Amino acid sequence: MPPTAHDLTLPDDALAATLEALAADIARSAGRLVVDERPDAVEVATTKSSATDVVTVMDQRSQDHLIARLREARPDDAVLGEESGGASGTSGITWVIDPIDGTVNYLYGIPAYAVSVAAVVGDPKTHGAWRPFVGAVFNPVTDELYLARAGGGSRVVVAGGVERQLSPTACDELGQALVGTGFGYAAERRDRQGRLVLDLLPQIRDIRRIGSAALDLCAVGAGQLDAYYETGLNPWDLAAGWLIATEADAVVGGLDGPGEALTWACAPGLDPIFGSLVVEGTARHLRD
Ligand code: IPD
Ligand code: CA
Image (cartoon, rainbow, N blue to C red; front, side, top):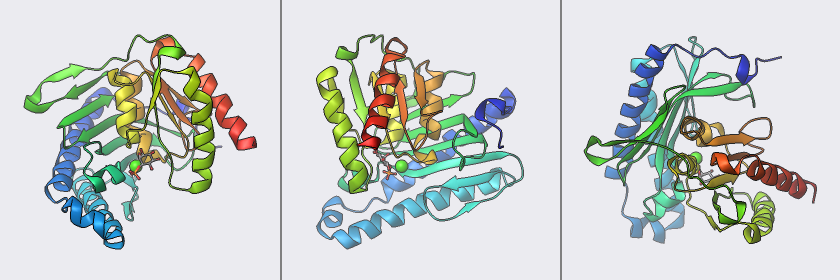
């Protein structure tokens, strides 16, 4: 049996602090690359096949940039990214990276996309067998950098280098909760996701679909959403945001932990009611 996330020993804080600084640095430089070289939105939107191609090219370029920086600084670590390429390693640390999370926003020029970089222990390809200990999520348009390391709290660094500790909202009533969610790309999954939203809507304040899972998780940590849930996420969508939300004292869960089947996060006052609701709803719509 592979070790579960709780059996895993985390690197000491000195190493985590060094890797947090590295994650911050490379997330920023990849973020600048994707913004500086973003093709003109109108041209992109009018030619669908080239639109897809152009975005793919920038996703790949951002990932190649992140991998090159990581290979230089940490040649023994593994890398798992959303795009093709990656690297194996011997150190026991894997970098889990999303070179542009919120690709559709990027395509349309909506300023809610981010570079997500996490350092994890365990096997990020096996559900429940890994956990992040460093996370950086950088929105290059708003110049907001969310950062966390295990046991060290989480913060956002805004333009001018001003830092603010993150904390979730004080919401403790489901009926008052502003809830983020997202939808996958496959029609069948969307059908189930739509039915779950339909169940939830009458019970909560409102729904937001921001378009970047990494930013959604940071938003729960930062008190800009009371809760968030989504099915179908990949490790690179959630690794950094999971840690950032947890270190802000939000509660993060899933089905036996955050992952593809379900990821949810909420302000502490909504625990356990919010998690139970989305766990139960997800199971019900899988059976339907
Ligand atoms: C997507 C975004 C979106 C979420 C999707 C993800 P991508 O990632 O995080 O918010 O709803 O499930 O796939 O494709 O933009 O990297
Ligand atoms: Ca993503």
